[in-house]
Image (cartoon, rainbow, N blue to C red; front, side, top):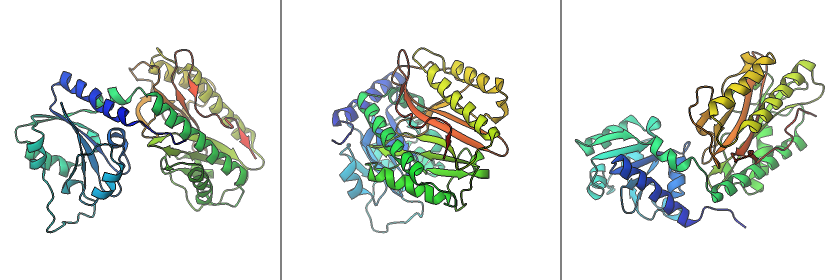
Amino acid sequence: MRIEIPADEFKERIKKVQKLMGEANLDTVLAFSTECEPAYVRYFADYWPSFETTAVLIPASGEPALLIGPESLTYASSHSRIPHIIRLTDFRESSQPDYPGAKIPTWHDVFSEFPTKRLGIAGFHMFPQAIYANLKAALGDGEILEADDLVRKVTLIKSPAEIQCLKESARISELGFKAVLDKIRPGMTEVQVVAIATAAMLDAGAEAIGYPIWCCSGPNSIQAISRPTHRKIQKGEIVHVQIGAKVEGYSTSVARPVVLGECADEIRQFMQMGCDAENLTIELMRSGVRASDVAKQVHGFITERGYGDTILYGPAHGCGQMECEYPFVETNSKFVLEENMTFHADMFLASKKMGFRFEDCIVVGKEAAEELSSFRREVIIL
């Protein structure tokens, strides 16, 4: 049986935003997304752009509209949960075709249909300046505000249907990792390892990979964000493998370090400490706990064991429509964990010569976090 978000839930999301808009005295909210960062539009419209950018325009009352580029109308019409679709040249692909002769609406047309004096933009920090200038010109004396905090109040706590999508993503991600452990060999390239995981996840029902998954071996293992290369994996080194499947727009991640052949004590001890730190993170993540307290305790644990200089961030970050989304759990975080927030316990540690990541998806609960993945959360030596 296919797991999906019911149609009524998409409508309820719009209503929740509209209630908050009334409190903030906003006429419209523009929830912006790109092909790489599709979260907001996927959340409200179940639409994921290809090549082009996109936005959902939410009025203070009434029905929303999906804004797309000129080429995506038939594609968007077959996927969008929002029936009203408006094409705009500003959302075209980056090669900037002109579409001579095409009759495409303008921002003036949009604001004629949706009168606006106060506009909030969600996705504000990635909103293109060129589009912003055109939008501002069309608004005239209208005011443009950042609306990410407003929209996050709706997206932060996950519904039962969303959690089911994350559970399925985690299940499939574990299958991808298992396939890697079954087939990985010295001499394989990092790209070949990623190919094994990708094929296994798509075959198991993922709609796509959740992000550009990677395998980072040897000196590449110190990279917190990376892409696989044609470097050949060698015995005795850390192979940092990170895998994630996308299911109905929701993405989780399973990450583990792996060593093939003999493992030096220095490497084994480093990895075991990281595994212990992730377990501690999960143990501390429960409703009512201040996020900064979690980060301080986990970072203190790592530092007391002599690895404080290997900490980059964390030890957890939000997840949902994106594998990594707001908020991060950091030592200066001011928020308090709430039930049904979803996070990745993300233990990335790196010295100058080696690094690794343990990562799993969890759902915050009253007494303890629910672990959506835990497959081989251990020091893996093959």
